[in-house]
Image (tube, rainbow, N blue to C red):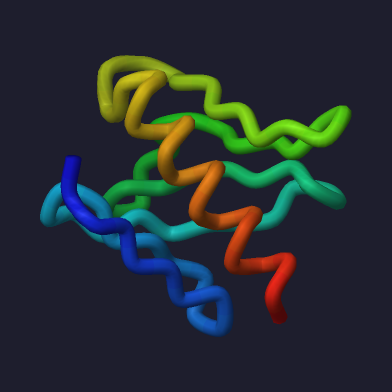
Length: 77
């Protein structure tokens, strides 16, 4: 697994050589975009980060890793 880089200010996450944009839907509920196309959602619920894929753009494991990194970084700001 590659290192995940999170930029909370610019709402982006770099993972496996791809840059994902994070767009808020509601508190602790975000859509993950790859090249402007929604690939899934990340949600922080009941103390756990979760990733839910929408289509074939990103795997559940990828979204889970993005969710964990995003919510950890966001909590620090």
